[in-house]
Structure formats: C-alpha cells, structure tokens
Image (tube, rainbow, N blue to C red):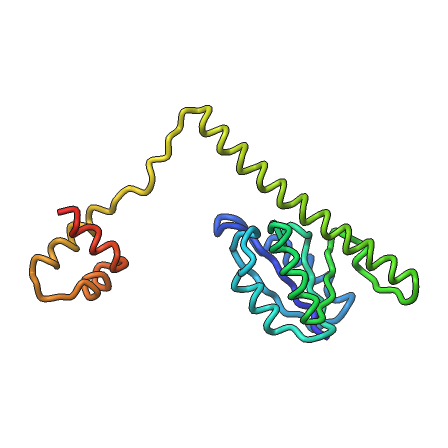
Length: 196
C-alpha cells in the first residue's frame, strides 16, 4: 500500500505545498511509504497533470490523501462523478484530512453506514466548494463592474512584433523559423504580419 498525497493550488502565486508537511506527517499513521503529487492547476478542471499521474500510478488498496475536498475538486457534479468513478476504478481509498470520518474503515453494518455517510459528506463538500468558487467569481465580476474597471486585455509586445517584421522583411526565413527565433507562436507571426 502507498499513500498518495495530492496537494493543489490554483495559481503559481499560491503555495500548493502549504499543507504538505502536515499531510506527510498524517500519512505515517497509515504507512511510511508515500508519494507526493503537487500541482498548480484549477480545481474546476477535471484533467490535471499531477492528478492524472496519481491515478495512472495508483494501485488497488492505495490511499489518496488530500487536505480537504476543495483541494481535490471544485468540479461540476458531472465532472466530480467522473473523478469519483476514476478513483473507484483504481481501487483507491479517499482520506480527507479535515474529514475524520474518512480516517478508518470498519467492517460490517457500521462500516457500510460510515461509507454511505462519507460518500454523502464528500459529495456535499464538493458541491459547496464548486458553489463557493462560482460565488467568488461572480462577486469579483460584480466588483469590477461597479468600479468601472474595463479590462484592456494583454498589451502587444512591440519589441517582439518589430522583430517579427524585421525578420520577415529579410525574406530568408519561414514563418515557423521566425516564430521560433522570436519566441512566439506561429499564429502570432501571421497575426502581426497581417496587421501591416
């Protein structure tokens, strides 16, 4: 058995490893053998690189340890159902550090009842995490609208655009070579040259 510790933050500005030391210490109550999976990726996305690697590496009987349900999911109900099925198909046991009812597995009727309760609690917490994320996004949008702020979008990198024009005027490079030389996508090269 391996404890597979999954930690996530939405952006690189956030510290995904914030709770890692506590989770590693917590994992030793199950097994000294653990693997960390750390990523900066939105919890609203079903397909995340580190989570996909965890699910690929996992073996039946392993533990998936997370700090809280919202670190695992801020998914829609349909996507969360898909993720739960993937976890189940791999034979993983989900342990949520801030949900003590997930810590132990009992046999018999008590264990069956506890399993049902855990599934309901995890579903409820996942739904609450999704709603919280949706509300926060809506409040930000409303706040920006009320402040009169109008997003201007990403400003063009005039240095790179000028370099694209310069290289193209020499007529000795393909659009792909120009893109590679300047460090932009080929679509950017075509867009800049089309503007001229």
